[in-house]
Length: 253
Ligand code: MG
View 1 (cartoon, protein in one colour):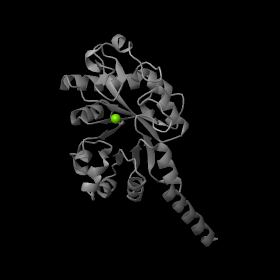
View 2 (tube, protein in one colour; view 1 turned 90 degrees about the vertical axis):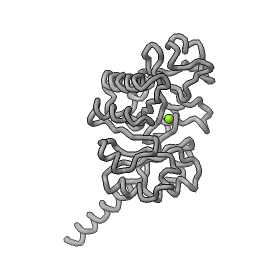
View 3 (cartoon, rainbow, N blue to C red; view 1 turned 120 degrees about the horizontal axis):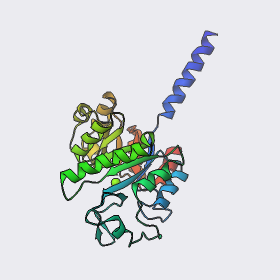
View 4 (cartoon, rainbow, N blue to C red; view 1 turned 135 degrees about the vertical axis):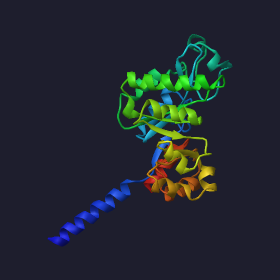
């Protein structure tokens, strides 16, 4: 009887160890194989259909305070921060979609439960105040939509990360730039680093340090099979990739 209990416990332990594998985050949605525009509702739906852990997207604040999705500061020749939402609507994404608002996007994400929304707040080129205003509006929007459990925040601006933490004590907040040590991220009460893969390779002890400090680790943008295998072996929590189909295949091998 004792042996049976022991075997059962060992099986459960082994099973949960294998469950704690690296999760996939689609970078700007899943767009590459499916030929969708980046940061579109279509690329987000594709990521959701692949049941990845999360789908990342980039957010700017327009001149008239609407949070919209786009990677660059420029959207078809318009400076997003210096344009009104109405002005941006004059241009389309290549698949005919209008520039998505963060509100539309999050409402789409709330139709399901398995794929989180990884909300990257872009740093304002106008001022620090505009960046921090965008943080405040992002938190308010997510609270209004009751999407707190489905949204995780990432940002390159350190002060933006601190502001996210200040305004929502429970939110997952990751820092992107790569110039803070795991200990500094821990002290700031952030969830963890979300760093470019070259940063983790240059600082080979950081993933282990993060684990010891109970920080989560995310790495971007990992697109080659070789790098995927490297970071899976390192047991990072999340890999952000343009190649969701390939990473799914590598993880299932
Ligand atoms: Mg991004």
